[in-house]
Length: 133
Image (tube, rainbow, N blue to C red; front, side):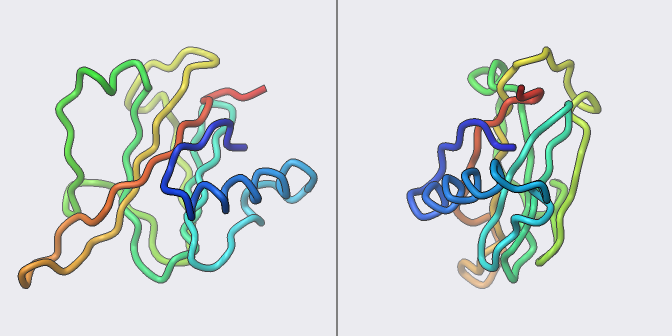
């Protein structure tokens, strides 16, 4: 379940409502997907990204502690993606050593057409606890 979300206002409102709904539900985040939204959830060292949009959503995640010191920019040819209407789960320890309670920042974006080329669009993000509880 997402712990702390800092995204653009429209997504923030939705995620807040989704958190309230999923906290009372036994179905979990897999069932919380609504059309037109992206949901990020975490638990037991895994991140779940649910893509309710009609576009491929690209993503990456980093421990919050390394974000200030990394040199990173979004790509549409080198990053993993979640196809429209699908969801992806990935283990955090595949790329980073994550401590219990450590905050993870998950970034996502879609490709947009700009000057006749497909490029990364606006980047959104969510802050989640790798092992909430």
